[in-house]
Length: 159
Image 1: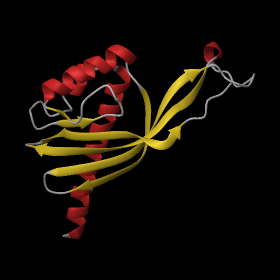
Image 2: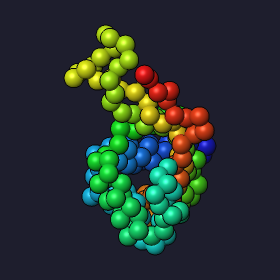
Image 3: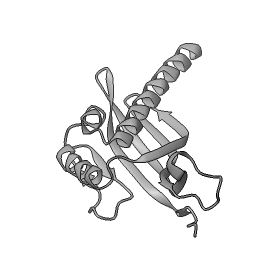
């Protein structure tokens, strides 16, 4: 019996990690349509992002959708790399925690460190996030996210 429970947990964990990967790809691409399929499209959904221009928490899909439009209007997507994923499962809830690096292209400080177009990828801010998913019928939806920059998490500035 334990094997069956373990297999079921692995399957659900794989589902959550796959959904989270779709979330990351959608944020990178500023894809509101894809994010509409991931977030719960109701008043239950909440979000807290590392953006001081909002009053938190954002509540309800219409408010979050408007917030996403505003964020993407300013930055047209984000180059974010997530790591250290941990998934906790219960019957109808999954909690995923992860750390992240918000990357950007900058002119390299050292000659020879260049990539295409004389630019190099560097980390602007380090952070962490918690994402709460709820099973609704056969699918999972994101009902809460809280991401924040970590203290001292900004990358050193190069001269």
